[in-house]
Amino acid sequence: MDADDELCLCFHVSWRKVLNYIRVHRIRTPSQLHECGGAGTGCGWCRKQLERLTALCAENPPSPDAIDGWLRLQTPNKKKYSEGREVYRAKKESDVSRKVESVEEKSEIGLGIPIDSTNESSEHPFDSIQNGGL
Picture: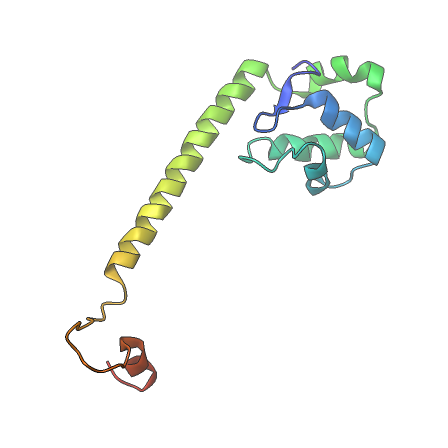
């Protein structure tokens, strides 16, 4: 990767920006990087790289002049990184769709409590559950 390539593809945060932020602000945990242009707060794909960079830079961050060479040794291939994100997002979207479908099915099923719309009583079916009914 080049220093000006995007690490966080959701918010277009470069590797250089993250590394300089880690160095200048003496970041020790990846969660502190959310203040660096929102890095890591989008789809989640870059979080593993943010964790890795934080760990690598905790003791000995690269100097601003050495970032390019350091990145070539420490980071994945740009094309594979971008392709990996597409696979990650597709899987994540598929997982979310399955969860939504599951929630929709459960809400259609409800609790199996028949609600009689002709019932004149103001009692809600859940009231009878609390009173030991059903």
